[in-house]
Image 1 (cartoon, helix red, strand yellow):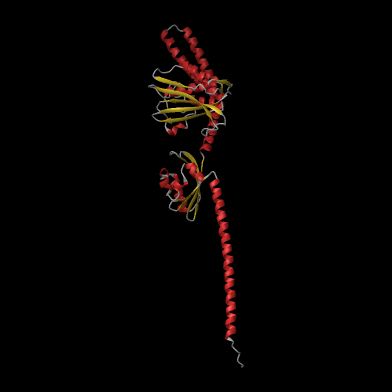
Image 2 (cartoon, helix red, strand yellow; image 1 turned 120 degrees about the vertical axis):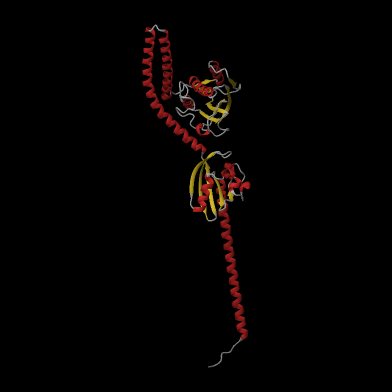
Length: 396
């Protein structure tokens, strides 16, 4: 076989050219990959920025926790709703930053979500200041922790309670009205019979006993008339009125225990109100009676009024308008927190259940009257210190 000539210079030159080409291809490939990587990183950064913009613009509070409950993200709305700055919270254990929530349903549910890796949704009332509100909370686990969305639902809860209360009052009113009509007819007959018996009797002791029975029947008839008024729910006849004059006249004609002091403060520039004076007088009288009964040994009743603009003031269940806010406060024994929400319920009472005490209708009637004026009545009470009723009446 003939030998193939070997040219080492030629092979070296060919190898050098091929090596250079491969290196050039590798460099071009790296450049392309680097460009694509930069593009991907840039798109991820844009996506992250868009996500942060969305999270920072939503009204829901949002934060993330790692598996040890350390806060890794805390949006602006969370800061507003919880009255804390994000920089005060980030990097801290949630329950060190909010010790009030330690041992609460929040810790229980967050622990469950992390341990079992499942999404949770719960609604709860957190009664610790300054976070005293209803909260709707949604928890979603991810690989290294959980994300939490939450809303304050106190206003929605108030609306639901008002709707439930209105339906309850309507149902009870229909039942009470029917029964009251029947009883009223019975009492009328009894009172007429007593009157005839008194005319025919010549025995002073018998007449005295009949008068006692007659008075009790009249008291019972008064209760029946209250039930009828409550059940009818007559619409108020609205007129422009002076709340100051109404209160002065009402207090002048009302007899109080001498041990009770009355303080009245109404500024000269107070708005006129659009009310049915007779109905509002009844409502205020019922509230004053409640205050008097809460202070059997005497005390102080304070009545004051201010002009109130629902647009610029606290968020209440009121139309955006101008109102007169009337506050009636006493220094009585107060109502326990668990009973405050029941104070306007028919027949709810913490007082004795004999004679006229304990009827439990006075505040219900006051509530019904003020609602029909498109106003609002709220209550605050502290056991051992007293109770304050806040009445909002539409300005004329």
